[in-house]
Length: 67
Image (tube, one colour):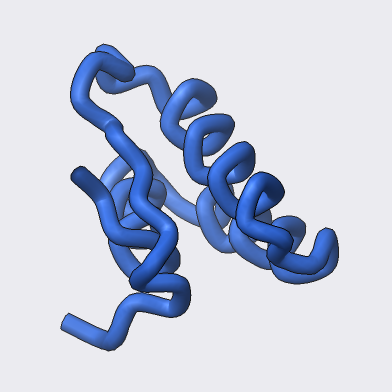
C-alpha cells in the first residue's frame, strides 16, 4: 500500500452505511477542516469519482487515516 497523503487527518467511516456520497463528504470535510487547499480537495474528489466503489474506498485510504 502506498503512503497516506495526509496521515494526521483521521476520518471515522464506521456508521457511514456504505454510502459513497457520505464517505466522500466525510473525507472532504476533514480535508477542509485541516486547511488542505481547495485544489487538493478537488483532486481528491475527482480521484474518488474516477472509478467504482472500491476505488472510492482505496482513494480515501490513500488520502487520510481511516478509522
